Structure formats: C-alpha cells, structure tokens
Length: 421
Image (cartoon, rainbow, N blue to C red):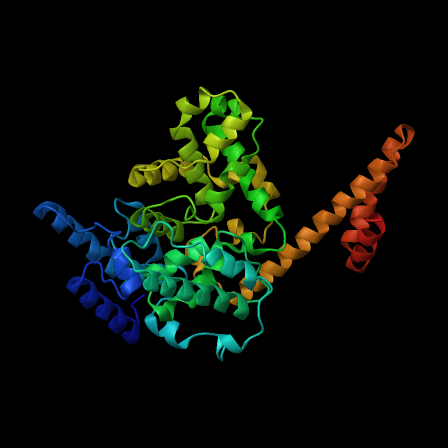
C-alpha cells in the first residue's frame, strides 16, 4: 500500500532532517542524551556506507508503514542507529503513522491540566524526583529540573487522560526514555498507546497478571536448559520483575543501550522481554551453577550485567523465541485472553488497535482478577471447614458453585464479602 501524500511528505521531511544531522538532538535535555550515542563517530568508509544504507532502509520502512520491515531492522545490528531515526520509527510501531496524528489526532480534547487529579500523582512526584540518575549527562542543575518537570507532565497527562490506569513504580523509568527520544507533540500520544496496548498488564489494580507473566520464565528455562532450571527451582521468578516490568529501563545504565533495547521491544511482542531475561540468565549459567545458597542466588539472578553485547543478546533471544514460542510453555494457558501477551501477540495487528479496545481489554482483565480472587476465597473457606468424609462431595460442590457463579455475576460481590468475614 502506498503512503498517502501527507504521510509521504512528513517522512520526506524526516529524511532531510536525519541526513542533515544523524543524531538530531532536539532540545537541551536531548543534547545531553546525545553524549549517549556514539553512533556515527569514528566510522570508516565501509561502516559509514553500511550505516547509510541501513538508515535509508529504516526511513523507507517508515514511509511505507512497513511494521515487519521495521521489526527486522530493529533486530539487526545497531537497531535504529540513532534518536533521529527512532523518532520516525517508534510512533509507527505503536500505531501513530504520521506526525499529523500526534498533532491533530488526540481523542481527548482540552488541557489535561484541567482534568481531575489522578490518585497516584503523589507517588509520581516521588519517583520523578529520583529520576535521571544515569542519563542525560553533562546537564546543569537547572536543566535536570527542567527534565524532571517535563517527565512529570508527561506521566500525569497520560494518567489524567486515562484515569483507569494504575501507576506502578518503574513506569517513570520507561517514560524518561520516551521523553528523551521524542519531540513534545509525540510523547503523551505514544506513551498512552504503550501503556494501554503494550504494558497494560502492569497498570491493572492487581499484580496477578504481572505474576502470571513471570511464571513463563521457569517454563522457558525448563525447556531451554533443564539443568539450570532444576538448580534454581526453589527460587521464585520475581527476580525478573524489575527488568520485565520496566522494559529494562530500571536496570540499564547507559542511554544508548536502553534506547537500543527499546527498538526491539517496540518492534516485537510484549512477551519478548521474558525471553531476553531468560537469555541473560542462561548466559550466566556457569556463574549461577556455582552458587547453592538460595539468598545469594536470588541476588545474582536479579542482577542484569553491565556491558552486555546487546546485538548478540537480541539475536540469541530471537533464536530462543523461535525454538520455544510462548504457546509451547505450560503457563501460557494461564495467561488471560485479554492480556497484552495475547492481544499484542502480532505487533502489526496491535498497531491498528484503538485505545477504546485497550480499555475494553483492561475491563475484562479486571473482571478476570475479581473472579480469580473470589475462587481463591471460596476454596480457602471450604478448606477451613473441610471434613475428610465429605471430600468428594465438597469437590463436586466447588465445581457446581463455580459454574453457577460464573453465570450469576451479581452474586460475586455478596459471596466475596461473606467469605471475607
């Protein structure tokens, strides 16, 4: 499909911008992040030619909204190369194909500052005050304060426009990367789509869906490296929480490294972050097998090493995914059909989803959470009053009760309040 004339003109403008300035730092906070990127510096003629060819491919894929093409380029060496190209590619991967969409396509109207405060804004401010520890570099105190102000505005705008979302600690780590890469008109639009369509599971009123995602990690390790899996069998997979929850923005200290990882995370399905963590663990196999003390294992497993070769890590993670797709993992069947792991399984399809569809998935997940919670309460109550002679009858009763309540949602609230006494 050919791009429309407005989209084509917009991408052509990006082409001219990027050719004139490979890194395209747009304001002071990004000029500091520019010390981040060494791309393009000290390249030989061959490397420069190769980089120029890849830049043309990225821009061409953006012009034609070629999501599979962008995915292949994101996985290849260097990802999207620099922030200028990321500003062209990232919005497309999140379903915003033209700059005009960012400027004119917001479904919500009015100034977000006039909207009611979100319940989590106090925690947002606490986290924002602790942000920008590792990057950008070389900023004055005033410039860092400006960065924090912009980051706070970005997060609060998204939360006020979509108040059903629940903030989580680490969300600010993700948002600061988008703030440093994107121009102001793009930020809230892109982060809103990321929040509702790609990391929605983490913004629910329960950690249940997040825990379900982590359960995939032991299954994956069990298939890829049974000996390693047995060695850490007593360790719950919560050691991967910080990495997977924040798209590794909480773990990676170098700006160009986290931006490079975001290239592939945005180009691939959300479950890919689990595969990356599994690969990181397997790359440290010998170190982990030498440790027997559970507490020490927990610490070592939670640590993401510095100075990883990200291109090798990504390539190995892609291979791991191809060998053991998520559908082959035992815990995959426990993932809600409304989870982003399933609704965003195909990124090309996800780019066409609306925020309203994302909200509907959110509401379905909330219902699933309440249903699972009620089932747990019923089981606990029946266990408390169990009698050995009635074990079979109780099992039948539980099944019948679950079947009936599933079709009588008005009784759910009553039952939960009864068994909580």
